[in-house]
Image 1 (tube, rainbow, N blue to C red):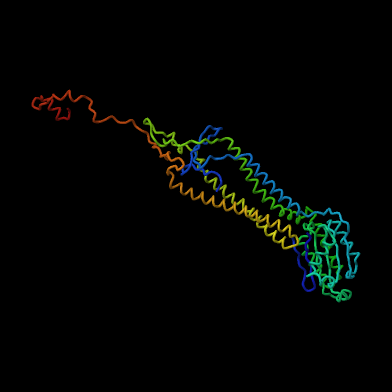
Image 2 (image 1 turned 120 degrees about the horizontal axis):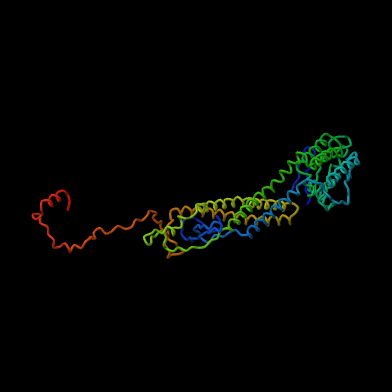
Length: 460
């Protein structure tokens, strides 16, 4: 719908117009209550790693990559279309009319000179400017202000979004002041079509309105004032269409920032998913139930092979850290979606309060649904992240709690790593049968002198 560019009045100056945790399984290198043990086999190296998880870890699939890629393409494409639509370029509109000056009250001294400038502007930009002059008395009884009258003038005469309509109004009793070169109690308003927005920007019109307003306040003929304004508009359009100018380059870079932002969110995610998919193709998971032999000794040999956590690869200890990092990245990723939803709601309210009631209702409903989904997802991710942090603290203190899912299976205990020496012989077991010596008696008196001497020296 067309909308106001802005305007001005005597004593009031010029004014602007209205422009439109993770949901996956919990994984740890240590046992935790309710966990199951899985063997992760690497096909390329033949090595096995053992992990504990609440359920079997899922590998990245092609379908998930395609889904994220499609979502990224949709959002990036929509953003790109918005950026492309904002690039200033000549309108290729087909008009049934041409630029014109409808000076119904003879307020302009030279209509033909003004029409020539309007023709030049249309030839350059494709925008069709039309200027009307009216008396205040023609609209005051039916309209609240000149802006409302100018809007109806646009929609009643043109059905496209490519015109730029001006209405200049003075009181019937002030027309003589114009002829005498005095400043009447005037007002003027401009209405532009939506397709003209990339060229007729707010900053451009502010400068345009200031030029026209200054001329009118200096007592210059209204036709000449609009000529001066359109002379500036032509220079501004030429500068916008010159892509090599510094202003055009800066404008292009700033307009590309939303596109780069959206692409910058999806591209790293897709790259990481592809890398994980390639790494997941090399591994496979098999559940290894607890057998109750963890840390025990059989046949005088320690079962170090059954103490699986001693053979677990150090890379497994990074699983929780990676999961937390992914959760934090997911939170950051969802924030722009929440902001887009809020912006859509605000835009819907603004559109509903304006001229497009149906479009405003649609945008408002869409924005509310979008925002609710985004906020609910955001809250769930925060809860999962907080819950995961609490579980990690609990695991540190309760590593050896019994498995509640497998009540008949005991948690393992760390096996001793010291070597085991063969058991010593029983020291109380005699080497000879004592019965054989029961009747043997030794009398000190009967011992000869050599034997006594040997006993004194410690021999037996």
